[in-house]
Image (cartoon, rainbow, N blue to C red; front, side):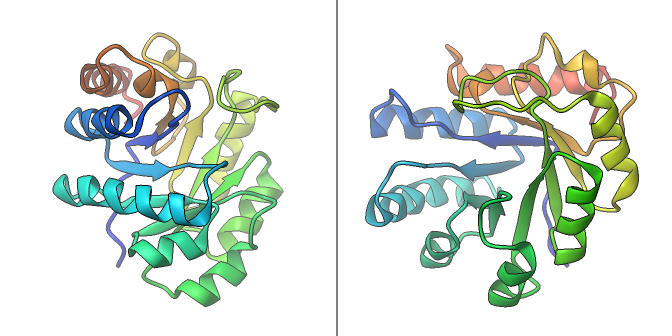
Length: 211
């Protein structure tokens, strides 16, 4: 059985940070209670991605947290990461599962119930659903209504996480929806104190009984 916890799912964004500061912030998130970390790099070369992933993996191992690589199965395999996250335009989930085997964590993005069911049936272990709010991490943001998020949670038996512009001050919109956790980027990555941001976000999510 795969052992992972998506309660506080932290997604990195290295934009505007030197490597040392980036790694410092990633470790702060882990020290603050991030339960899973996704390394997301859209613009690095394969070699650059692998080198950074190796350094991040050293940190996640220190905190016994799974490392998920965004998009790139080759990078995930190269560094021995615990998982990969795939979007609609990436490799099909079923194909990735055949390549990676049963023990590898595979996450998928979903914005509709049919999309979620397709990912689950293809072998996804968890889903990221959103964006709940507009985000600053992507040029185009397609918002997902909370009713759709609720419907997806009910439609699949795997963990479903909300994503998109979430922070400690607005996650109350998720109250009453049976999510497994929340995914955040800027709320931690751009915080003055990433560790404290993670602590406060997790505490607020517990207070609202979201996780």
